[in-house]
Length: 178
Image (cartoon, rainbow, N blue to C red; front, side, top):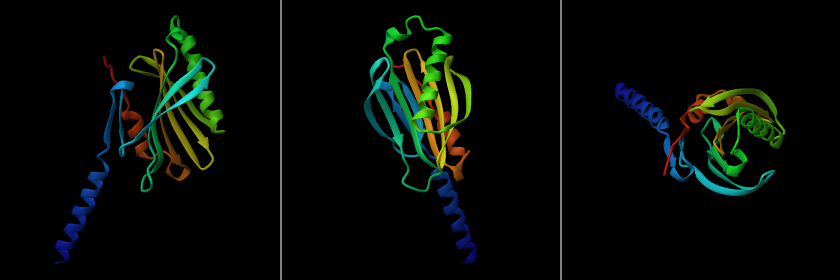
């Protein structure tokens, strides 16, 4: 009887662990990306005033109620006016990405822990970590032609560097749609 109970407990724990690994694929064809979230995210759009005018900021976010290592998983896409990038070179793109990094740090009154230049499918990007009160924000920002894609995970200090951060950030893919 004890063996049967023990086997059942092991089975239930194994099933729970497998179930926890099944993240949901979120495909936004109109925004040209795919990402995997722990649960179905919510989608919103906000108008934001910028130096180049008012932009739509599309946010696809999941904020777990409890039982997760992270407080927020999100993908954000904003499209800049195409004419702003007509003759854009690497230096110009770096300046745009610098602005995104500086804006992110300043908006949360945080401290930049690291800032790495990256390439994503040939597009320029940045991978950063910001220390905030009580936690950290991990951000990957990619400039794809005139569109800025930002993937981010926010975690509490105690949960820093947990595997779900990398799992979410690495799940992001740009898709081409027509």
